[in-house]
Length: 261
Length: 306
Ligand SMILES: Cc1cc2nc3c(=O)[nH]c(=O)nc-3n(C[C@H](O)[C@H](O)[C@H](O)COP(=O)(O)OP(=O)(O)OC[C@H]3O[C@@H](n4cnc5c(N)ncnc54)[C@H](O)[C@@H]3O)c2cc1C
Ligand SMILES: Cc1cc2nc3c(=O)[nH]c(=O)nc-3n(C[C@H](O)[C@H](O)[C@H](O)COP(=O)(O)O)c2cc1C
Ligand code: FES
View 1 (cartoon, rainbow over the protein chains, first blue to last red):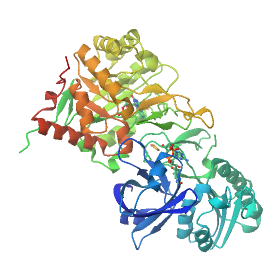
View 2: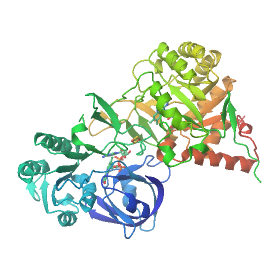
View 3: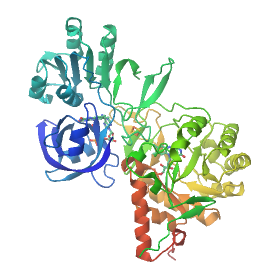
């Protein structure tokens, strides 16, 4: 269950160019959050940024009662967040949304992340009991790479692709998944990133008949299921389609249910 | 010792306080119930209902704009029968007024819904003749005095509940529309619905909303809404429910001074799940500070500059 909370910021630090890590003290969220869930943040009091901003939970430290968010400075809201100081309080709604399914039956897993979509996947790796965990991450170029060490530690292997070839493989992260999918015999693929990437991962998973869960992004009015603005089109059991809520019915979906626009 | 009485009776709708959650921003109360005690909210106007279920528009359906937001949900809802079956029993666990907000494509649809709802356990019907996000019907009725008179008088025949007519601000003279609704048998009016707007992503040269246009709400619309409530209250005798950008008790008091008997809180409910309660506390604080004992004492107490 999510709660409306005022929590203290422990630190805000630059992680790489344009990306910040914020550590927040919260016994409630660190104890209750599950991988794939997000928090919805009121970046400032008043109307400068009116709506809350959704940010995925990247890791939790239950013992210390704190959790980490990583966010890219994109517009006014994330800019305000980047300027927050240790000791400031923020107005947070969370944890929100449907989490990844980490069934213990999934023994061999692949996590596929692109850009700012990698953050919830680190939390997933922390919590997953899978025996083999392979990470495939894609970034625009070397300057955008974050959390490389953490992903390396939490998985059996990590491979990085960059669009411009400035680090790792030149090309798309999905090329690496396609290369390995036959030999690795994955039980589950978890993916989060830009829509074209998710679309490609979905196709690959379908072609090879591997289960796949994807985490979607959509513009949100409330983040807790009340306004129906965050629509995503999914297949119904009767063979039709319907709009469901990314914030409450997602953000994690079975890839085969999603109808890409 | 407090002797402040916040309760209101608006055309027979009895509420413990004058703060109502606005349609489309509170679902059917289920999500907000996780954050606030619905018993403390005067009433809930539920998500706009149609005769048959509606899928709504393509996403993106929301764009933030300066001090406001555009939405183009397009009346996604499970249909009036499902509402009666699945949602009323849930809402009735709480002591809060239930207002069924209805929208149709044709006068026949409006009348059929009103008839179905006459047997339902609700406190009032709110006629949404002003949704800017659906193509056919709906908004067309609310645009002219003739249109609103026609739909109001027809629905009136089928509706045995208090009938609130919700007005669109996207008209030249809202007072004329209000008068036509009153003359045609409306028991109360609510205003304003959203203002038709557009936001463009200049990098892609496309509107942010998939629907291209959407309805503007939030603090940005408040001065327009207050002015319209004032004009309407000068023109009609039936009670008026004011809304548009209310985030605090102070905002609500502005509407009440302008003549509103109650208020609805929309966008604020999305940002702050407990917004209705905060607004209510703010009204009470204002009343205490100014020595008002009953909510009705504030209504219309505006002193115009001469
Ligand atoms: C479930 C979910 C999880 C997310 N997790 C992260 C994360 O862990 N790290 C991270 O850096 N970003 C994440 N995002 C994206 C992040 O929410 C946006 O970058 C942020 O809202 C931008 O706000 P802004 O004011 O800085 O930018 P602006 O562009 O000024 O924002 C304007 C409006 O558009 C919305 N918006 C803009 N971009 C997006 C987007 N990509 N998705 C949804 N709404 C958007 C904003 O919320 C705001 O309402 C996530 C988005 C979703 C939906
Ligand atoms: C996401 C959203 C959905 C809405 N859906 C409806 C609706 O179904 N029926 C209706 O009459 N008004 C609807 N409205 C309009 C509100 O009820 C209200 O009239 C308007 O938002 C102005 O108030 P506010 O500024 O407090 O939000 C909707 C508004 C929003 C923001
Ligand atoms: S953002 Fe309001 S329902 Fe998802």
